[in-house]
Image (cartoon, rainbow, N blue to C red):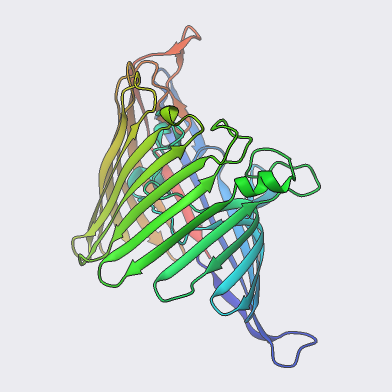
Length: 387
């Protein structure tokens, strides 16, 4: 979210030398398909990239030398709610911050977002490959370490090193936390702790590792279970951003653990052209299940006068008896001040029993029992802005 500064260096009340900075920002995305096909009928609908209603968001930041506050809200379908974060941050000593509230931290997350991810996402982006590891562009190679309600610590003790640790903590309202239950037992909370680090080697890249505890309420088991992730982000090649990651479930029964190997890369060919690619392979602990794969490639090209072109193709190859699905996008956009308007054409081949499709344009069921082979498509018109 881009933020526009509207109040700076305001003297804090009841202090002698403290200064605070207050910023407000807004953003939004909504997609209208004036014409689309669900495989049987011509339809029209509105959506967002992730499905559901169009969203308007706004945030407020209050920043001082040692204390920050951040409130992130969303407005959709006529309702207001907390979005991704609502937190207080305190920096008691240099290079250490402590946060409490609804928290997210993308410092280490390994993203590979391009093409269809920012339009109507093919449904397998949300995990249609029948695995706990999703084929999402966000966090494809390395998941977000902190994504919870509770408390987190971030430290940068030496140059190049960052350490993150978070504990999902329930409150007295009985609302479920990231642990998936309402228990406030200390043992349960600490078994669901998340710990990660990243170390940057100048001119080479960044090494990352983390453990994401699941806690006793998960289906991983009753002991200290969770996910182990390691990744390497290459920075040694000019104009190339590339990352490879490995994710593994740590279960009581290790024979049931799934593993994922993923790669994401983006290369800036010149000032106008960039290409991106991604791939993920899931290896199942059950030896009777074949590996599943998802991969794709895309290109972005910038013309004069704020005009941009993009194209990508994605392939999902689920395990065993599921047939592959292919999705593609051709799009163009025009920037206007603090936003842009885009129009494109997207399609997905829908294999029998695969469950794949486009957000808002799923393949209809045959006799109300199962999906049939076919092709769904849409002409999305995307409205995006930020303040």
